[in-house]
Amino acid sequence: MQRPGSDRRLQLVWFKRDLRIADHEPLARASSRGPVAALYIHEPSLLRSPEFDACHLAFIEDCLAELRDALARIGCPLLIRTGECPEVLQDIHRSHGVHTLWSHEETGLETTYARDRRVAAWCRSQGIEWHEIPQYGVIRRLRSRDGWARRWDLRMSRPLVSAPRRVRTIEAWRDLTAVAANHPLRCAAELGVAGPRRPEAWRGGEALARQTLHSFLQERGVGYRREMSSPVSSFDACSRLSPYLAWGAISLRTVHQACESRLRELRAADDAGLPVDSRWFGSLRSFSGRLRWHCHFMQKLEDEPRIEFENFSRAFDGLREQDFDPARFEAWCEGRTGYPMVDACMRALHAGAWINFRMRAMLVSFAAHHLWLHWRGFAPYLARQFLDFEPGIHYSQVQMQSGTTGINTVRIYSPIKQVLDQDPEGRFIKRYVPELEAVPLEYLAQPHTMPASLQQRTGVRIGRSYPAPIVDHLVAYRAARERIAALRRTPHARAEADRVQARHGSRRGGLPQTSRNPTRRPGAQDESAQLSLWLDPASIGESARGAGAQHGQERGQQES
Image 1 (tube, one colour):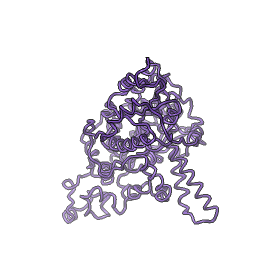
Image 2 (cartoon, rainbow, N blue to C red):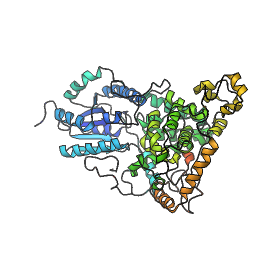
Image 3 (cartoon, rainbow, N blue to C red):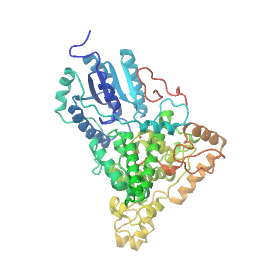
Image 4 (cartoon, rainbow, N blue to C red):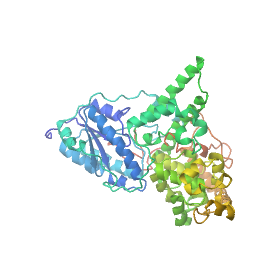
């Protein structure tokens, strides 16, 4: 029997990490099938996950406020509920009757994968179709990496999907959402989400995403290629689109096509003899390549979900597990390691929840190699610091910079050299480590080498006003390099490297080619840690990770 006020064709659009109406295919397709209901769920299991932080929620709430207004303008109120997804869906189905569930595919955490399996099972039990639609270049149930880049290009070149001008809904849905629409969104404290205030964190929303894209492509991005590595220049030179991509305030396809359009515009102007800053061409080509790498790294988690918890190369199992030092970890988290660049980067994250990719790589390198901490111990903490946390990129990159993929060039960053190369005038360090303001530039990279008389004169007392180095750089560097190199020479490590490369490695003629690892066997390809993809841009079918109503296979059963 049909429920009062319901429609047997009710299309429920479930918003997740896709908080926009432009280029939103589930919304567009649902609106052509019948009356639409729009839903966002605050899921306690996600809010309590070790990777989630109050800064994420604040950004999400900004996006939801704008999304709610945008949907209201086209006639479809947004219902925001708190609860576990299957239970919320059941409650809505009981009261309104749902014919079809629509969402985007998600390559997420174990928590969201398990959630999607439960949703798939619920849909099957209720006879509800669930359509999951790709929004990135990640391919579900991928058989081979061969040809992946071509498929990425095809997806990203498809026409953008226009937002519906008007959406039909049912009166019962309007009644349900009317009260909620007049109330403010819930804050972190109400939802039980912990995290410090971050005064410099960027705000969310679809309008800001588009403004950020425009300012990058028209003004800020001209020096991107040269300026993205330094924490001094990267705050302006980088696109800063990564949080908007991570939470779906703008689609990757929109960004890709806008970048290509801007390149065509610049080439045409150049061909016509008009003045064009030649830096644009290298900068935008570099940016465009990183959009591809965004999905390349997400694909790794899609293909092998266990890398959230286990080493890519099982040859590295046992390398660091027994050596985790809580005191070293705490000093690293708090930005008091005695290495100014490391401490400034961590404190910058505390303030604004964003730093550029090279400094992220340095933070991980220092934790994994200098402090010899296992990546599973510090990866969730870093996830909470990154406003643009994207699980696939995050766990792939943490392992890459920790040296546990077995196929990548192991880069152990010198925190001393990074000061000299990336902040020679001390502008970044003195902003975020103000206790070093009086330190002369020649000592800023290694303030512990200041003579006692100079420490007294400047008021910077090492061990008192600023900590002494937590480890000796050269000793820690050599020990890490030797241990990793010795392990990589073993037959087990070589066999694992071949397996990882076959499953996850980039291919010639597709993604940008990089340097080769001299420790690998001839013919084996390698990816480079230099293209470390907590990229500035992101900071992005069925599968082992999502599960539609008609599937929901166990992990490990997908073909590689």
